[in-house]
Length: 331
Ligand SMILES: [Mn+2]
Image 1 (cartoon, rainbow, N blue to C red):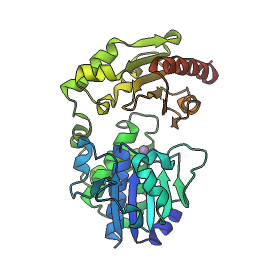
Image 2 (cartoon, protein in one colour; image 1 turned 60 degrees about the horizontal axis):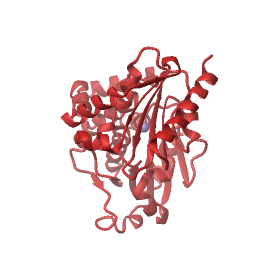
Image 3 (cartoon, rainbow, N blue to C red; image 1 turned 90 degrees about the horizontal axis):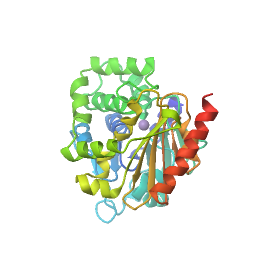
């Protein structure tokens, strides 16, 4: 698959790299590392994200490569710039959010590089997906490492390491394979600083965020004899704490800490008033199957869905689906 991807890259000279809406450490890390590789191969590479890069990922972009999408300004003619448009860390064009209409009109070749589970990527001229990879950064690592031999550029090594850390939950999740650890060891040997990376990525809470966590945990709910635990956050909760939607990151990890929990959920209201769930499974329950019933998806152990429904009604439906899936996968 990666040889095919390398051949595809060779055939193009102006590559636009994008990732899913609300860029994360893996999408951004993979994009920066790939851009570094492409630039050093004499190609033009740009990275455009939407919305702007979150504060805690800015350290990955010391050279200021990343552009925040401005459809009315700088990027009015973005669709005509590239000869290849690459979606990284997603294989569903809609996940690009506000970039999608631009993607639809481009005459460039369209490709995706991804590690998410999906039936069949649609809307691409070329697909490079491997659901056995722990992160998109792992795919980029596998692509560039044999081609670079000795030393990796510092920007590339840091970006790849941050991608691996992000998608393995600091090497805690079940996708923390021996291969990922070997890659991480190699990147550390190249000079990446694990403690500084962790601090930059995660030790960034504000008082508003911690108050929101406290408020949410005060409403912790347990169902199915403690196998399903969830918390919920309304827009009113955010306002009351002075918090933002970004502050919801990692909140779903809290109910998962409970002993005996198989599935943890975070329910929240999106900015446009839809109901959203993030589901995390300990190991056995397929929460991707649950989220697909609501038009969402992701990985077997980490998935999400959004729906135009009042939060309370959605919570009841998801609870029922989680309990049913638990019966299927356990017992
Ligand atoms: Mn990823």
